[in-house]
Image 1 (tube, rainbow, N blue to C red):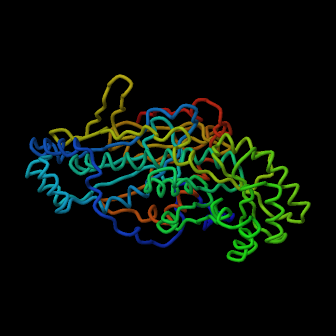
Image 2 (image 1 turned 135 degrees about the vertical axis):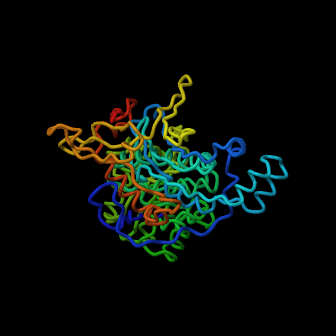
Image 3 (image 1 turned 60 degrees about the vertical axis):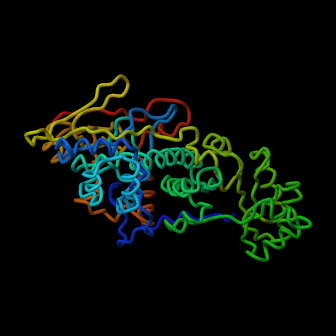
Length: 477
């Protein structure tokens, strides 16, 4: 495993909502239709709405979570770019339509609608990488009911998974402070989830991934050199180390705990010299071993050789190694499973729609413990005079007023700081904003996350259980 640079690209933007100034880039390679990544009830609702004439009512759906996972003080929006990349592939071709017809899922009228389905609406939301809190309207999908309702499952599947991974990854990179953290969890999850997890981890500050498909799709730095199997393949450890150094040079990373760590370190320096890049520890008491290995490396003259630690790390283990002479962390299982919170509990709810007279009306549900708040919301974060977040502000009122609202300081007193608007345009009249997709979309999101997390109160980074870092409040217009 080689230590990886973060590869952040351009400097931070003036505003956390501003993307990096990079040229437009193509979407990742076309994929098969994603239209059947849909729950059946979305299409049966569509059929009934087409029949009664309500399918073409103008609607606003919002994605939000009612609560954070236990012990979490903030969440991280991730997967937005993947949602945008998926939209062009959300098409019902002959194969998909034949299946729906043969299975009797919907009637001929609905099949005709789906045959020409294209999302031509508008999507706004929190910039990918932004932190969020209970009630934050992280995504707003606006269009006809027919266009928007069928996207529910796809949108939630992507955002719930990726945001859970990024939220856990942020805790890990926060605990690591300025030491790089590397993602290596692909073998612990579904093969495609591994790609998505690697991407989400980099959004939240990971420096690289072992997953080559993620590297290929999103331009991520990839890392990795050898496992224990390579050492065991050879007749002895010196032979294995000599082979690896011959192939990759002295700057490689040698895994030194296959047999005896102390002898492994000696043999590693013998094979690569004092210019050895790194040694990796993958078992045992990592904190104690790191101290011993650092002392040994320094004694042998390998003072610049880094120590990489792996083996079932999570944010708590990383924090526990803060005082140890560790240079790089590698995380697998805990990362790809959201470190105990594999979903964010995000929901996709209709909050406004036109009535029979064409007027936009707020709608909401009042089910026990599953309420929603009617009406479109504008979202902003209130910052104090030091630039620290104080509140998540949701602005409500008549739809046309909410659409037109912009923070201008009049809502606050002179000593109450300022408001930072959170929503950015993602899709306009069906056209995807290319700033948020592909490799540089990930770079934008990583920049966004660093800036957003830095403005949170200092207590937001605690790993102990506690309430959300800032409260969510509602302002009426």
